[in-house]
Image 1 (tube, rainbow, N blue to C red):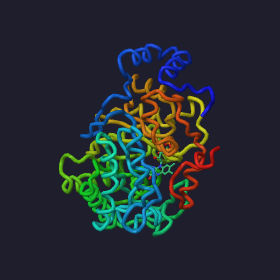
Image 2: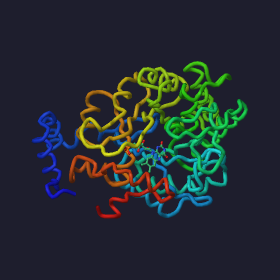
Image 3: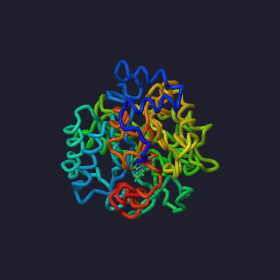
Image 4: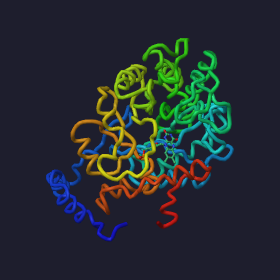
Length: 391
Ligand SMILES: Cc1cc2nc3c(=O)[nH]c(=O)nc-3n(C[C@H](O)[C@H](O)[C@H](O)COP(=O)(O)O)c2cc1C
């Protein structure tokens, strides 16, 4: 940490007031009458009452061995829960063996995994009674290292180039059923909800995208039909989990390819997803893990897309959220109200508590160098290599 970093909450607030006169009134209020900041106030995501607006975005762990998570993985969830975040979304879990990305990916594709999965919500709820945890469920589609790449058509996802096999209609229906069963297992394991992984070119994302989905069956042809896979998953899952179990989605706002989802088509697609019964939308996009985020312009890189939405359900924006003051200003301005973090919490699981208490810098200390994601791609446990190397 820099030597000029303020150490106490008072020093932090004073420094912030000098640096950003616009938030002086806000920080003054925080000093005199407790914490009045919006992002540290309670909020609802579906039926989940969250203690603040800070969400740990799904971050795959590489910590699954056979039928359970390693102690290292469980400790990661203990640290996150103890670190003050309101909602934890787990790393993606495979809904069927054919939808795994690697042998180290967490599995939720069979009842024999429920006992091992139970340890994740158990450690979160034991560590912090008011921290919620949602299981991210997904199918890797064409982005797999261990199974056959599949997709809506044979069109490769632009950033991966692997040519998939096109799924039959019957196979799509089996995948839908697997998502529903995965939601049931998540509920039985004690999770507070599920999030469908509908982003980053994985299977659901490739069905939502008009670039990869030019099928001729009921799953393509219009925005509504491309969203049909999500509608069917929600309908089938609802029958198994009942009316109160939250079902969220993470989706691409921009596929960054000509003919894919973009800033113009995204709001209509999000409306369809809301109509499908999803109870919160996390906004991400292609090239989700951008490097070297420094100035304001680099931060919160999907914000302008999230701000185009007019949904009734809550919106979480993820990608490059780094400054607590900036996020407070965004929340105060109206929307979105929830902010997702992956790399900053790999570096500092206690970041939400540090920000709340006003300790240290109002920026995340993550330098967005992406050593974590490169290590993950090599099969290493997901962690901050900068902290480890003491850089
Ligand atoms: C090591 C690592 C693993 C990730 N795993 C997932 C995942 O399982 N599911 C997912 O939706 N996104 C995953 N992401 C993407 C993050 O959730 C997030 O969208 C992205 O890192 C941008 O947010 P950030 O700037 O706060 O890191 C992962 C990111 C990293 C760095």
